[in-house]
Structures are given as structure tokens and as C-alpha cells.
Length: 135
Image (tube, rainbow, N blue to C red; front, side, top):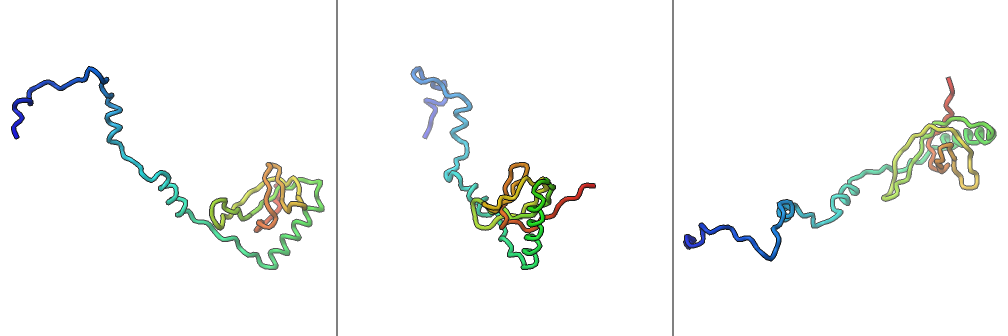
């Protein structure tokens, strides 16, 4: 086919429709994500969690002893160094966490340590607990 009859004509500009901006024209060729949330789901599946450890009888006895000593001193606010297991909200398992904070009280009804920062740690999730000594 030979286009000699139209090749040198000026570009047509519509009188009815306004000309599309360069930004809108470029948007037509932008990448399209057909599976919305796909990458987030892949990242979540790849995220690893750990299993909660079963403490030995000796470790349980030691934790119970430390907690009973803390209950006797309920008028003091000792600063504690606590290692605990944080259950994951989205998948099975969780992670090991550590915090140092002053103890506010031990909630015997709900079986929790309540810290001065407002955090509540279930007693069943505590792996290790020590009182920090001031220097």
C-alpha cells in the first residue's frame, strides 16, 4: 500500500474533544497489577514464625519462685528484664521478645504481669524473668 495521498497532511485535532494531557497518555501504558494484594500474600507466607518452647520443670519452678517473691514485694516497683513468647496474630507460632520495664502489679485473676508502661504479659508466655539491679 502506498500512502502518498495522506502522508504529508497535518495531524488532525478534534474540535469536539479536548486533547489528552501527556500524563494521561502515559498512564495508558503504565504497568497493570491484575492480582491486587498478591505480593503482600506472598510476603506473609514467606514470613517465618517460631514455636513456643516447653519449659523444663526446673525452669517452671524457678519462674514460680521469682513470681512469688515479686508478689510479696507488691509495694515496690522493681524493674524487670523479661523474656517472653509473643503469639503471632496472623499465623501459627510467634516470636521471642525481650523487655525491661518497671513492674506495676501482678494480676492474679487474669494471670498477667502488668508493667508501668501499660503492657500486659501473660504469665504462661514468660520464658525468663530477672530483676534488674541498680548500680
